[in-house]
Image 1 (spheres, helix red, strand yellow):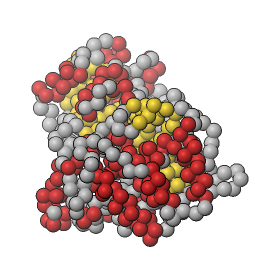
Image 2 (tube, helix red, strand yellow):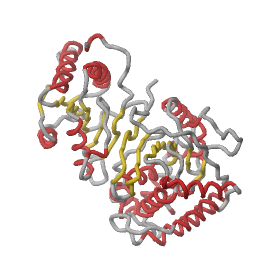
Image 3 (cartoon, helix red, strand yellow):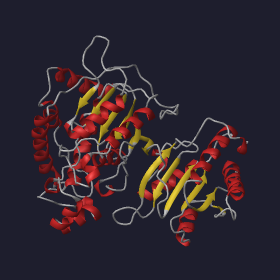
Image 4 (spheres, helix red, strand yellow):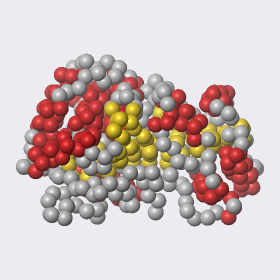
Length: 459
């Protein structure tokens, strides 16, 4: 089994978390308070987060329905900021819910539960993370996320040696986006009852307004508060966070320095795994002190979308080259390839030629794509713009630096160094999948296609 942990990940001694026990009725009451506070601050948020609610107000919400152990939890959180230099945080979205299956708009309502499919997705993620170690699990108190967290945690240690508390901490601000009058509606009902507002929600989410609120701006403000008042104050150094699609987008986006207008451009699949490492220089909404290790990883690589760019950093050794080429060949067989672009020399050339030669032998009528050398991001974009490949994906095998630069350019980030790409890891960019026909990050550094089993064909 392939662990999601990379060899560079920081490992610290195990320290258990404490639990905040929140009943269903109290959760909804606390969410109502949270909505009120979020609304009062959202209007000051235009294209980026510019104002923060007070940390004391947020901690009151966190501790409203807690047991006496919460005071100790708050002390641990408050004292943890000056601890070790790096914290590893793994984000998981909940599994499919009953309202996901029905096509209902959920928001922060708590009426839906996991379906059997959703529980199966959570079991798959539990297996995916089986070799990863966590000190604590911070989760949304909503039932669909809470149950997912229980399944994903699995058989890991649930209490300290002294018998005190389990590892789960319910954090109200990890709830899903507040969607007010939209919540509970079928999507077609949303169109019928809120035509213009619903289209803004889909096409211009950063400016979307309903019931006097700007939900996406409120969400980014709330995500910033979670970073400032919860995640960066933990004494724990290996955290599992189980929450929802929109709030995970906001947490990851704000960590990378991306504002509310990037909503819907950071795909979050049910039970997908994303991972970041933050250090002492981290500050939300700046992109400083953060490294994105994995983004939206699921058991299956999400391929086949129109105008999709598939980036693969070249191998750095012969051993890597063999394993990566074999893994990429399996991926090529599962999708339509419009072009295979590669770097001008070294491993990129060898890998591309081996893939092309094998494809030529195994595909009736010969390989359906041609090889082409590219030297820069501009070359990749020019090739994509000049060709109409229908549903075919453009695969790019190149040095890591070019792959990082491409992601950064697609997302409007100054530097690609924030993306810690592994040789052979697959990154997929849907070039016109966003609300304004802009690029969407489908996944970053997907690793599950790389096997340790030898493939003699590529030796």
